[in-house]
Amino acid sequence: MDIYLPIAGMSQSVAVLLVLGGAVGFLSGLFGVGGGWLMTPLLIFIGIPPSFAVAASANQIVGSSVSGTLAQWRRGNIDFSMGLVLLAGGLIGSGLGVWLFAILRRIGQIEIAISFAYIVMLGILGAFMLLESVRAILVPRPVALRKLHQHNWTHGLPFKMRFRRSKLYISAIVPGAVGFAGGFLSGVLGVGGGFLMVPAMIYVLDMPVSLVPGTSLFQIIFVAAAVTIQQAVENGTVDIVLALILVLGGVVGVNFGLHVGSRLKGEYFRALLGMLVLAAAAKLAADLTITPRDLYSLELRVP
Amino acid sequence: MRPLPAALAVLAMVFVPAAAHSVEALKADLSNHLVAITTGFTGTSLVLFGTRQETGEVVIVVRGPLSRAVVRRRHHVLGFWINTERATFDDVPAFYAIISNQPLDQIAPEPILRLHAIGIQYLHPPLHSPRDLGAKREAAFREALVRRQERNGRFFQSVGQIKFIGEHLFRTTVAFPSNVPVGTYTVEVFLFRDGAVIGRETVPLTVTEAGVDSNVTQFAQSEALAYALIAVAATAMAGWLASLPFRTR
Image (cartoon, rainbow over all chains, first blue to last red; front, side):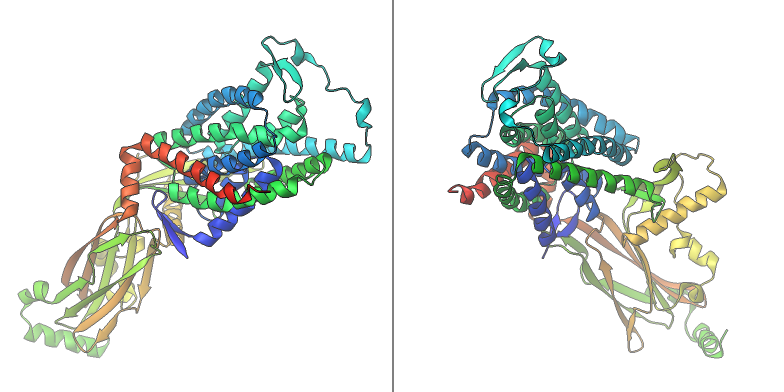
């Protein structure tokens, strides 16, 4: 059965959209990432124009992260004070991101900028995560002898805050900056930013792994909501019908993802995420380097 | 020229006064003058029917709203394919379809087809800013514009899809894909004989969003902020509702 998407101005199979939402939701629940970085390219792949794909993906992230956050909250896996500090940085970052998005769109380079950003970022992150987790799997360290966390230069920064749930006493600037980076990506790429924040929260903030997905999802709700509102007001590209269908598929997937995720060990979790991130980077790099079938592309602007 | 059409042409010239040609030679209409895009819209077809009072070839030209087209070309830069060149054309029909009962080149000579802009190759949208692209590159951009539109199903030409019922009546279907652009269309029906237009009729057509969808579109445009807040609230609500069945675990 097909459904007409009023804002995007095209019709699309409901079943395809539901499956797509479900698959992305599953990964979202498994890794605590919004899944938008996967959703946007998949939507483009099935024929949704990039600007509508980005906006719909931001909007559906609101729904799937509400669902994911509630599930994590019931398990007590959210550090709310950390989430709020991340969010403060995230809102500033997303505002800047949407602004940059509008500029890139005007000069016709948004798609290539998006691909480049993905390739560089995902490539570095994925390789790092994979190497680190493989090492952890091969050479297990006795947990009892580990320090609570490593001290480095970030601990010299001012505005120190105590995050009881995470057992951390660190400068608010660090999570604020992590949130800012995630929010910036969210605005410019229409993603939740979780794929950057989850590794950053594990490696930079040194949060307990069990709290990372929930806390990340919690702040993504609000960043994605802010991005959706800005996209709707500035670009008019938010298709509510498309987003709702994706959410319906997504929330079911999220809960299955969470269920599977709770049975995975930390190292395997990170190795899997690392591989996934690398695969996405490779796919995008291939798209930009393989000779396209048609060198020309067309954009119609009906007055 | 084959003898039979030639003979007919001579007969027609003898028996039909020249002035009577233009107006009454052709009558045509569409089964519907409105294409309403609703929630279940997956494309549609309209029936076009008409009568010809004289023998001749029928050509139907469907033209969508004029729009601006930006065509970009990728170049290989440091191993990556990047958009580096572009050309902007004005007055490009967002939709353009031709249905005829014979190949166009057998119906009329090139100058006549060009005059009435019948045939994709005779569309010549002006460049938005007259830059000197060079004839060769400009031609490549024009070709790409047509190719992309054909790939999207918005430009097409079909031959032999017109059904004649007896001597005078004819009918055909005009198919619109699901991504048909919204706007004001014109459907022109031509009757040709011996390479000249002997009858012509223009039928108006409107493609519009209808029902809930048109309300959604209008609301999203006029009250963007309220729409955005509703979109966020709706998806958040859907996320919450859908998580309820999993609560007990």
